[in-house]
Image (tube, rainbow, N blue to C red; front, side, top):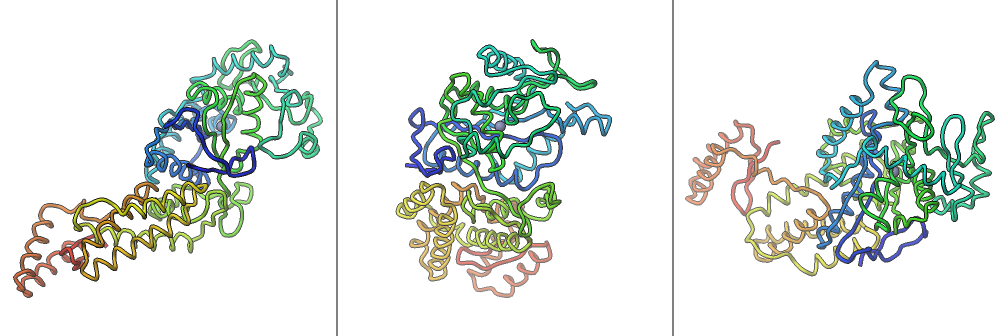
Length: 450
Ligand SMILES: [Zn+2]
């Protein structure tokens, strides 16, 4: 059984889904006002691995991740550039999904857009006002956190401690510095929607409560995101559900920070790293591998060294795929797969799962080198299955080989079988001239792009 660290409980617990054989998860998606950064990418990769692993074990996963397409930052950029905020959001969403595709992140089954849910958000805010837990001020509607049982659960701090640490703004009409905005009254020139409190737009924290409950229902299995979303965003989502008497997420899961050259990544430090830049210089699979090398709750360090290391490991996997592509078909080594499940069920111990994968790769390569294809086959099949479950696509480079090249490869194999070395060498030169790297393997001639 899968065990995960539940942030609300502060320990690793058994994950028993609401409905047997199914798993519902909500992962906070991007606010689409600029390019994704490598912190976003780590988060989506962590939850992609969770989803893929569960699906691989036969669980039916319902994965929801929202798109925040209305927000202060989108409006501010629109004003700065004289553009329609909706157009900025649509463009940035396109860029987001292209980058996620390059990382091999599966698209969520549902990606609700905030602007499509405003009516329901207004209903939720009105219900909170009716219950006496929310109040109106001159600039919006706020939730009174003191009226919510267990506020501070995800922050793992008491209300008093949180209050002591909160910033108090003098001009504030809020009853407590921790109270947060549910509805923002419109300022001139902003996109607006109608509400009982006049034109305005919903607060960010309200969006995810409405959309998660709407698409996944009460008591859905898991709510996730990066460590930075734990407080206040997730705390405030939960507070609204609790204040309404609705059962929210059964479990909470958060991934660790990304460190860039030894410092926690943040825009204020100026070490914010654009994912598109990274993908221009590196294979998206290398970043997945780098993420998998650390436990999801630990920080990861992104430096040119750690990326180069991940690329070297990836090259070993691709070389393994080439070496073993022509092995006899057959089932994977069951014991290896059982060990993989043990590691993953243990709070997604991907560093241990990767160690196992590379061990299998070494064993399969060694068996091929020793001329024992039947011994290599089940081990190689297990390694391929594990790589697949982790979303690591292996490329043996034969897939994109054109017809003419295939013909040269098979003529060369025939020449070698006939011990006609002169022809074999001549064909090798011809392949090299076409830009291929030629390798002799026990399975015959293999070509790949350099
Ligand atoms: Zn959210």
